[in-house]
Image (tube, rainbow, N blue to C red; front, top):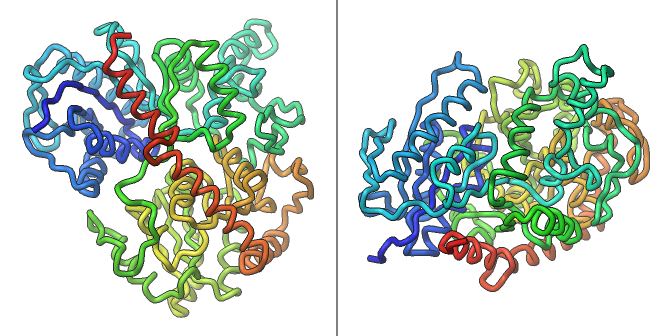
Length: 528
């Protein structure tokens, strides 16, 4: 048995879906570096996801394991306020870290199992998720010499947008600009949150700064009139953590994805700020590269809808199914008519549909009528489930031909590795950037434009106009479905396959992202 000489502590967010890439990253580190011990301090509700990841990676969780999964606090229940839960988790994390550093003992709040740390080396590196209040500051106060990196599930452009300087198109000076506007009296009657939103929606109506030449006006960063989350001040705290307190970041991207933007990011974050930047690439469980067959798709690690989904997919033709998912947070709430039009049009075209609601309790009742759902069942052309575990495995199923997605980072990478053509319906944050880059620069995806609302409904820089009618949405879906079957679809599939090979080369031994992980471990082991 290898001697464990290096100890890294991971702190995922209480929202597992927003650090989903952290689970395979951890298991891949354990498999690759036998001298490494990893302690994961998790929100109790996230433990099943990390245990599932360990099982998929064929890792043992015994007393001598390299991987220690410890639940440190339980949810207060359905009535708890999310921000209060985040604060509670942040406080519990700091207490647990202090115990580990002092060589004490922790008891998992889920299993009751005790974990001792007196025989392990002290942590040399802590990798924390975003939006954990004051955790980096507390780690540095307790142990100034321990390195702290923030795990950011983002591409280069997706990172620059919230945290970068104004001249790069970023919001990194958002807090200072808001305070100046309030102090000047121009926005003195507004709360900081409201004043910040006023500034955010002051569009110059000019192209965004894009080193890779992605054609977007600034208002196209907001393609849907979704209600903004009340996290402005949390974002400001995270900006301070990433640009000041932390020693650097781990980004889930590769230099081949947005190469010119990656260079710009290095110039700013590495050279100007003097921070560490590790581009580790999309993380997946062992052997994600080959196409699955009906028999090869593994049974679900946890019971749930996966078995039902596999049964449905086995009865569909290869490459025929449109898989529709908008992730855990977003859904076209304000334009249910557009959503119904998409579903109805696909059924008219005799295209099978696999639809997952994501967080089903947030989807408005009537998003799909009982009559429409019955039609899907009777024709055996549709299946609706609340949630799908192991989405990456479902995407690799041979019956999946198209993924209609919001374009979030997890879904984007999982579809790319599965070589599934995407039709994007982006809403906010990094999604519009991901969709525009893959659609216009790599030319390996489609984007729905006629579903745009709010500021994003103004004419796009790439040309054309937004009609705003259900008829226009129907015509666009029909055209995309036709294109997918013809020369346009073939071209995009070839581009997707070629781009995927470039990404896989960076993840393979000798590739930039593979070596970035080696550099990370060397950094964790070093004295500086």
